Every structure is written in C-alpha cells, then in structure tokens.
Image (tube, rainbow, N blue to C red; front, side, top):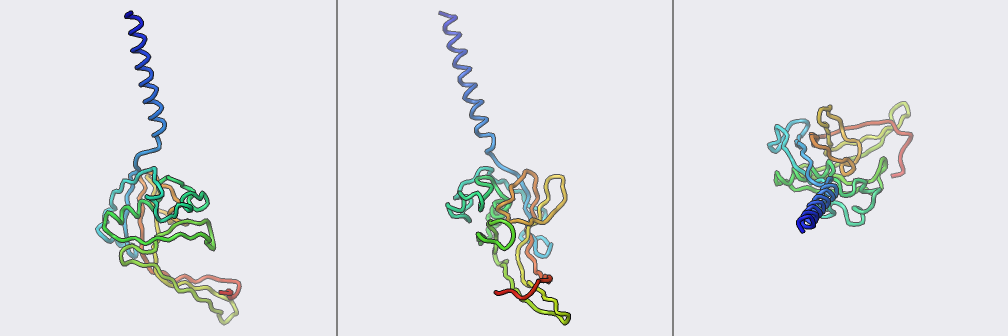
Length: 199
C-alpha cells in the first residue's frame, strides 16, 4: 500500500512539474520591456524628460492597446508586421500618457516610399505640418521643397549609438534597454526632381 501511495504522490508531483514547465514555455514571451523615452524640441529636453524617463511596456499587446489601428489593420501583417509585439510607437504613446499629454495618431496605408504603418502627428500642442512646393532654377533644374515641422524618432539600443528611425515607428520592435528620443523640430529640405509633378 505504501509503495502504491508513493507512486501516486510521485505521479502527482510529475504532473504538477509538467504543467508548470508547459505554462512557463507558453508565457515565456509575455512580460514587459524596460526602455527610456525622452521628448525634445530642436534637441532640447521638454516636459521634464531630462534625463530620459523609464517606461515599462507590455510585450504582448492587443488591438485595444494598439488602438491607432482598426481591427482589420491590426490583423493585417503588411500594415502591422509586429502583430501583438510592442513597438517604439507604443513606448512613446505610453510615455506621453504618463506625462498627461494628448496624442494624435494616423495610419499611412499607401506611402510614397516604404511600407505602410502608423505614426504620431501631434503630442500636446506640438503639431506636424508640411508645405510642399516645386520650382525651376535658372539652369533649368527642377527642385522639390518641403518646409514645416514635425516629429522624428532617434533610437539608441543598449550599448549602441543613436540612429534615426527611417520607417514608421509601429514597425520597429522594442528591445530592452532602448533609449528613444522623440524630437519635434522645424525643417526645410530641398532636393532635385526630374520635373514638375502632376499634383
């Protein structure tokens, strides 16, 4: 009888250990990512983010968390390649919410360059605007010109160097230790074009 009881106890212990091991594997990708976020204007810190503020972001998000996407956009891997994974955009929005700053977002479904994605156009009173024009110089060369102000992200990975983000922020997965500087600045860009556009 004692041998039978010991084998039953051992079986129960093994079942509990197996269930725990399976649940640990199933939830290995859940938790949080610790990053730092700093808001700047023309490179100078704003809203009390000097030094950058620490932000914890869940690693597994739902469409309700990423409400800048509609449900159809959230489920479309071309628009939202990260799926439920946290993005740089999610960290910036969370940091803005901690600072009680209103955030306006949008989704570009048909970008002129690159892949579709979501973006931040306004935080608090810091807006995005652009004026585009074209002109021909005395030598006959056509030029495009963009003048305005807007937001740009610069990401420093743990142990790395700061680099600008060249894709929509909803497409960049968060990594533990990232420092994100979100800068609002004026710009005036001029570049050569082949000729006047039809716009």
